[in-house]
Amino acid sequence: MAASENDRVGSVETRGIEPVPDAERHGHASQMFWTWFAANISILGLPLGAALVSFRGLNIWQAAVVAILGSFGSFALVGALSIAGKRGGAPALTLSRAVFGVRGNAGPTLVTWLSRLGWETINTTTAAFALLALLDVAFGIRRNSVLTVVCLLVFIGCTLLISGLGHATIMWINRWASYVFGLLNLVVIGFLAATVDWGKVFHAPVGPVSSMVVGVGMIAAGTGIGWANTGADYARYLPRRIPGGRLVAASAFGAGIPLVVLISLGSLLAAGEPDLASASDPVSAINTMLPSWMSIPYLIAAFGGLLLSNHLSVYSAGLTMITLGIRVRRTLAVGLDVVVTFAGGIYFILIAKDFYGPFITFLTLLAVPINAWVGVFAVDLILRRSYDGAALMDVGRSSRYWFRGGVAWAAMIAWAAAIVVGLLFTEASTSATDVWFSGPFAHSWIGSNGLGWVVTLVLAAVVYALLRRLDGAVREEASAQPPQQQVLPAPAAGEVS
Image 1 (tube, rainbow, N blue to C red):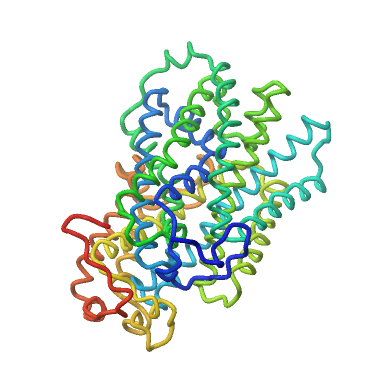
Image 2 (image 1 turned 180 degrees about the vertical axis):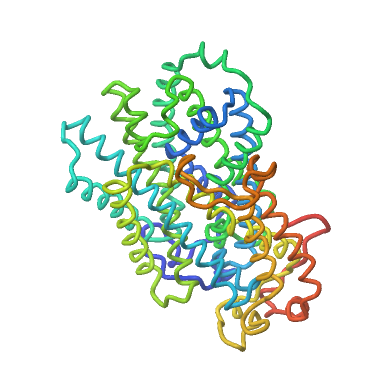
């Protein structure tokens, strides 16, 4: 099916969060492969892999297994949740109104927006480091405060251009830029692999199984979980007829392939450079391992990979901002978003002393409410037949998704309860002496083994599944028939399509 004028490469996407009509749906499941491949060829996978060795004591074989389970598993979940976008034609947090109510959805939406801002700040900061290092290596221009601001603005300008144009341009760039920057990454990876101290790698002791469990959670939180509440944003233009299983497979393999390679390489490098995991500037830390002639393609690949990830995040953040109720055009929402990340980038580079510590702490804390949302939304996706497009856009009392006072209490109670319990098992710290938050059970077996995120997700799903049956307003909504064009056949038993 041909794309509409609103979704053509090079044109500005004028659609905001309103559902995409069936007549304008187009594309194939392979688009999700390139979407998540592009988002994950950035160098942030290297310090994650290094952390598995330096902080968790795993050897390279254990780290590889952890990378496979954490990366493929978490992005299979992203693909499964993106099925909602194909069904309802709207962004993930707009569809979430049908689950939490038009008012109750504000909480999950705000958390999602903060999550996206955090990821964008990390991407922007790291890309500025890469550009500063590139100017130093190629032209001998040393870093200073003014040049730092300029590098931040260059990256933000590139992000704004791509994200501002919208969905079709993003999909096109993801595919073709992945070839270019993926090839550059392969060249650099081949060189770095040749510098590995293989003696240390093969003689590294086996780490405890509990560390592998922690590692899987850390990789999942640092990769797929951070994107779980945005998958539908990129599937909403896809035709309904595409099988859901293809979206799951395309997402898992699209992200899993580059992530496993980069995380495994980070684990290898940490055998000879254990400080890589805690480097305040991971770009420069890796750059010091390279001769100047190899630094240039490496830094270009680093900058490009981060740009591919960041324009996706900014695009989703703009949609999330509109869902929050900020009445602006999508392009203006994108602009407001990058202003905030610019300020965050200045803080991380010019003020903060540690890069990686705040990054992990940020992921740890936000993973709790995001996992709680995933548990609730996943159960609703399995049980829901369809979405009412008109009701998704109606935030008044007449909306089908008003429930009671604008809140679906079954979902809100499950979400809140899971957050509280999840935080009981959570500790967020940059070091042993710099603890930001520590729950009373953070050092229990569950907390120490990094299983708090599993408890959060499962508890949210179970509590919502139970309360959903008791909530009369939710039962009434589920039994109502939406407009004819929105009615979808129920999935077969045990299948999400």
